Image (cartoon, rainbow over all chains, first blue to last red; front, top):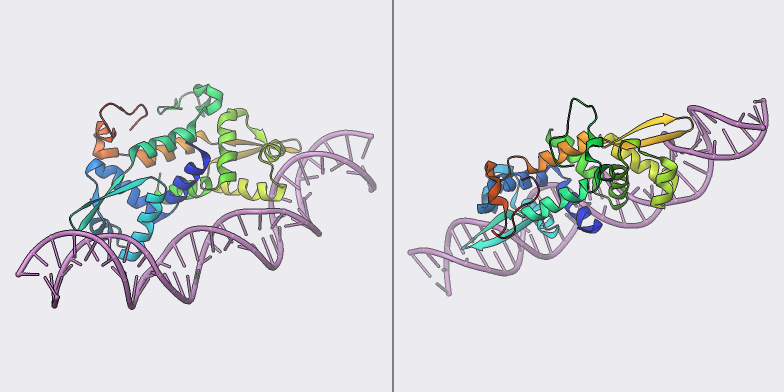
Length: 111
Length: 111
DNA sequence: CATATATTTCTATTATTCTAGAAATATGAA
DNA sequence: TTCATATTTCTAGAATAATAGAAATATATG
């Protein structure tokens, strides 16, 4: 992942409404959600939601597929994982153990 | 992590200069870097760098400690890990295997 | 074709963030 | 105290992003 792609993805997620939408989709998994469903859960006018979904798509974090009149939105899990990997890449120069702020609190996640 | 904290962290990272700074600090590890060192590597005027470091600190991603005339900046690894955890939380409703876009390309990172 | 539903694009207004020069503050050294 | 270095705060103009109503487009059904 290049820095521009990472900035796009982070910018897309750096908004309360869009982050909530993205997390909904992450948790929904590969079967996704329709725009209407998201609009209801997010309590957002259609035009506003459409604007935010575009931002997420532009960044590569969300994909859409038409099913009849509805558009099913799904999270792009590999984009998400690439972003996470980009942020944590080569953490502490590769010495992951150094990231633990205190000895008792060992890092459980990847470092 | 609450959504507001996540949005703050993501907003702080959603800028090419700040993302580059943060990654420098992540890779530098717990010993950190001085403002001057970062300014040189990032090729950024002091005032601009200071503005961006403030944003990263405000978001909890960076901490500073004075050592004589210099201020040592370090990444906050637990904040970073919390953010990553927040993004990927309960992915696919807990069925992590579902995130793999294709059977042949298994997810190597946490899901 | 006419009508209904689902979603997007257009538009303009409002709000927020970025940038960097200049001045200010903090620390240390002579 | 005077000077040098390191960093921040102040400032204001320039750039970018958010919001949502209204109109447009896509698909389906009678």
